[in-house]
Image (cartoon, rainbow, N blue to C red; front, side, top):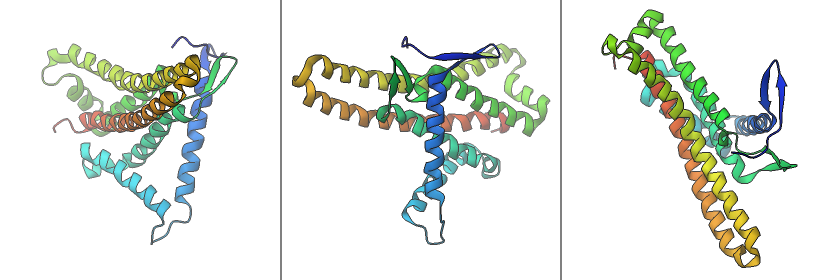
Length: 238
């Protein structure tokens, strides 16, 4: 958390170059991954087409589990892109890390709280927008903040803030901890020399496998919770 960063200011705002580079790398990987899978689609699907359709069907299922089929339809593409983006973001730092002069420019973007809290704002912002669009501002405000009683207003406001914190910090904590412990294993090998090469390699591979599993689960959890929050705003009667 205290590692040096490279920043620049624009219009009074401070931007982390490492975060920006990492996000661009993830966006490029997502683009080329989907581009490669979606070329030359056929009625008789190929192996790569099967992979793409499997991901699409699974993410569609995540949205329809929380929303009705009719309400979920506009969010199918969002669920697909969000899951793929989070999955690659969570895994990037396990396989690719680029540092220069002590500053890390490429790592998992989701190991930075600024990125995960921004994603949480986007997810909850979409949920509130969906609520206003579906119910109108009066209906949205009443169902979100004045149920079950009007006196619940302060508690409901606090709940919205808590949802924001837990959604962002849960993702950050899991990914940051995974990369931190992997770094500790690598340092253990460096500091103890040849005697720790084999044990360190075995431990490192085991932790990478576990981190891939955790990163995948956290991608799913983030997407599922996003649609749970959307359902709470547009389907309050349920």
